[in-house]
Length: 227
Image (cartoon, rainbow, N blue to C red; front, side, top):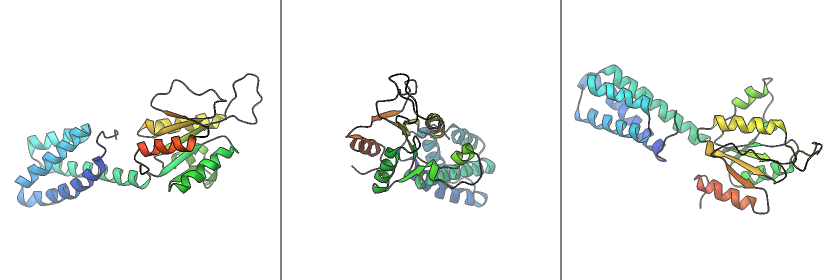
């Protein structure tokens, strides 16, 4: 679904689901009541606030026909939104780290995130289930991706610009398309490699003596750490 505009959308949809479900259960017996209209208005307001056109279209149909099927569909869609929110809440501290193989900074970053109560995910540490790398990737659930663009020590320099492993840019591309909010992709770079310049809505943090401070501020800005 489309990323909601309202930061409190999740908490509100959980409450709305519990109430609209009760309204739907009583619809057969009592029909349209003031309570029905009250909660339909709340659902409509939520859908408008969050540009949820699928839900909004069904609300419009119910307002015209006042039928049981439309109300059931509203309840189903609201339930889906609730489950989506609850799942997002579970994985909000999961941070995927893409990096060159044997990059010491990846371990340092992993330990830093552990210390700050996050769950850092490194591909090489995931269990090998015999599936393809892509399948393994798509089974991961995370809210933030940190891409380490650092010099590949095995790359033979022919220019002043170093290279990073191809897997890193592949993983960066997957994260960019996978996450609902593309701003949740953070690129950390060491200044020795050429960084992509045509990717929008991505934050760049230079790897220097202040990278932990800058990363902390970035995570705080996303509401993932206390200020």
